Length: 293
Image 1 (cartoon, rainbow, N blue to C red):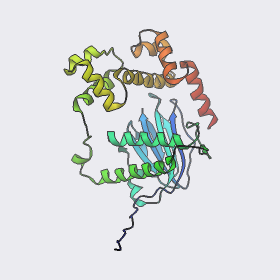
Image 2: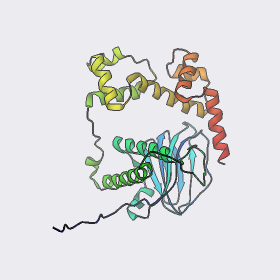
Image 3: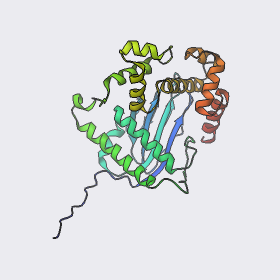
Image 4: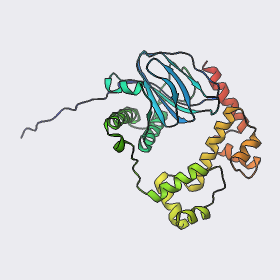
């Protein structure tokens, strides 16, 4: 028997990658005007950015993304209010389907945000650190990395871009509906996300959402890969890093603002999560941004 083998129709092809960055910018930061012969994905993980480009100039808010086209002159400015976290990926892709994403910001769905996070993690498997030095002309790959990591990075980025194109072609009413496997636990997640700077206890959550502790803790970790307490602390430390980079608050003010029991507990938790004291962290961020200028 002779089988008829079909070829693949490759509609989005990422042929090369230049860099994959995760920046924790200070406020009042402005990059140099730049252009290059490949695409650049720009995603705001926290805060806001002012983007200046040939195809789009304006504000890019949290969970929003644009993709600069090859040879597009562009720069960015951080806002005065919030020191943002930003993912930037430089890659070669010549498909015209990406053109609309250089003209208007796109707000990612929760699933797309999760996919982009996995791409970032896979990129860190492939490339050597640091990942937060601006204007890195050569980002070397690791001498050894997990089997298939390089290919997974390519496939993951292509899959993500395909999802953007697909979402953009759906009716508005269909394209923004997030998939929730456990609506009750997602409601807990959303409540914590909106109130993490207040005192939240398991007893309060169980009362508010009519759950017992065992089910709440088990289902939350199963859904999000971390405990309730780990999630609360991760949000507090993430906000603390942003407040530190803004330069507007002392460590004591940040500790009080985020509901830590004391400045000493705040400093200890910050070091556990980041490996640095608050003062060492902000010195490190400023030093890296200065190197890239």
